[in-house]
Length: 159
Image 1: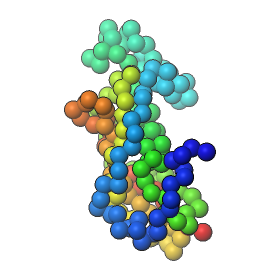
Image 2: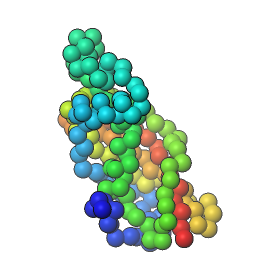
Image 3: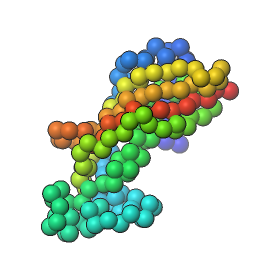
Image 4: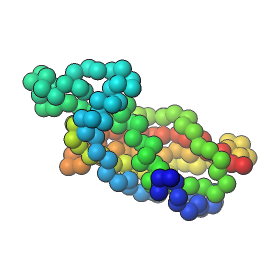
């Protein structure tokens, strides 16, 4: 089992007390050409800016291939597992969506990215359902601008 799943749980009250705070920053994750190619295969998007380094170097301002924006977004899951606390009594968590999602700057092949998480809101919608809003910024190592900024909404269910 992945170590990120073995964090000690916090109480719901402790989680809700974190609203307004930066919860943490994930480790760096490599976005290399192999990862980009695998993602392109999964989503069947083989646009040259993602999968053809020579052409991307010749024909784009990026100088190389870049990750799909949705690949960068999909890395939010592992980053959140590393950072966000597990709430005691949780049976599952699901994505509910985004209030805002922007791809601010490209992630060039070979770059490393990490997520910075700030809990914005945690409110009970039902007695056993928590709606959690998290502001996430995905930073590119050595970059001046983030790759992505998002207001991410999740639903957390309790036994």
